[in-house]
Amino acid sequence: MSYTVKTGFENMDLQWVIKALQSTYWADDRSGETIEKSMRNSICFGAFEGEKQVGFCRVITDCATTFYLCDVIVEENLRKSGAGSAMMQAVISDPLLADLRGILGTKDAHGFYEKFGFEKNDKLFMQRWTKVFR
Image (tube, rainbow, N blue to C red; front, side, top):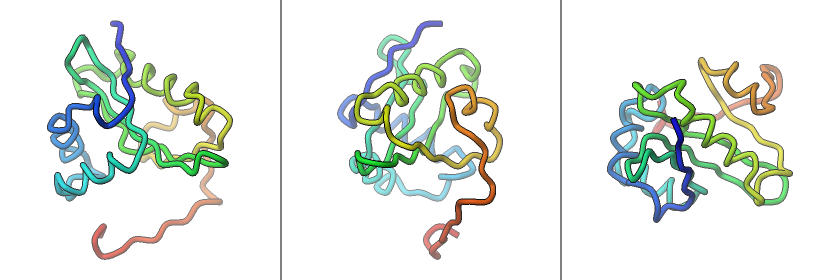
């Protein structure tokens, strides 16, 4: 299948993104308002099949040294169809991000991200959880 990747909050289907993220193990407790706020303060990428959104991810960055890739989601019946790869290619080739160090967290998709130059590193990163995210 062929997918179009769009960027920018204004090009995303907010209701689709909210529903998709709230169905995940990592964002199931986020309110729609929190999801919208996170999108407005990030660089959004969406995979589209025609005009229908079928994938989403967002990037948080300082635009100088590092970007953090998060909230990557593709409709379940379209996983492994190329939508995720199209979004990842758009992220790593985006002029704002191409020369920056990218980081992400994943529970089960290491092999997918390795195809785009990410390397597993269990010794470097730490996290701090607040009670909002427990």
